[in-house]
Image 1: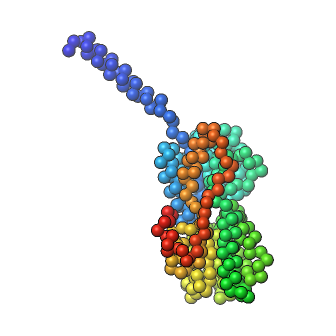
Image 2: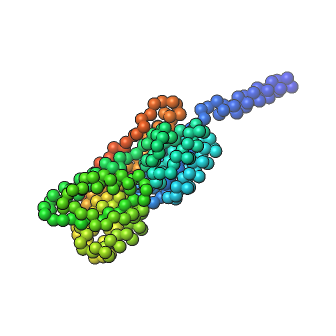
Image 3: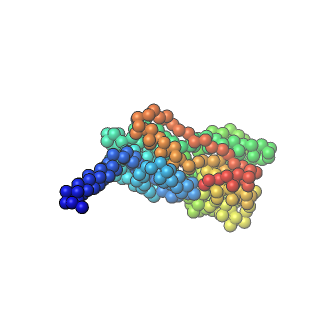
Length: 322
Ligand code: AHR
């Protein structure tokens, strides 16, 4: 090979290498979403995290995930860090409803769109977020209340004493589920709420508070309304340890529809679970892509949900995805 030909081949190789190294720069930049999650308090939350991470992977989205461990200040810090990193979209599931105005104004000033998933915020300026994707918690509370009204009808003349395990104080699901439930049972002479207290959406706290309810009211408790399945499952343990039969001596109504609740229903220990779907990942990815592409987007995207009474639990169990 002549020296001239060798020089030609080397130059061609150099140019080709250059062309290939510049290729990625031409490819579309992946969308970057900063997501602040509430924590890992329940089976529901774990399924929600799995759904968001899997959907991001599937959609080719770079996800910056931060676990707030139930603390609003951690979520505020995470949002500020996402702003500093100039992510394309910020998404978060707010641990509580109030106290978001300042940080959301900072995101707006940085021109970063904010998408809420699962839980709402209480802000006067609704332009601080693009959309809220998630359940109608008031309706979930109503569904729980309607089930109980029907249950009471089957025992005419009997007063049913209710204890209620609320979710995290100040959170949208705790506020709204209580409101929906109260709205439906209000004025029903058979239904009387004896005690209501937070169980923080966890099994451990649900058990602890149920133990206290049982200590104070014992066998006069007829119904437990738990704002989520995890607290109901914790309470079931407390009821059994008190020598009573959950699902029979005390009827139990809860919310989420997680696998653990289905197992409890099949075992006859839980009477009904109102569905609250955590599978929000695909909708979040689509909404983020749409908002960045400048497409119009609905201010509220509501998840479709069902009610699962114990009678259909065994049939539905194989279809459950969380
Ligand atoms: O915000 C949704 C609620 O949060 C779920 O019902 C509960 O299980 C979770 O912790």
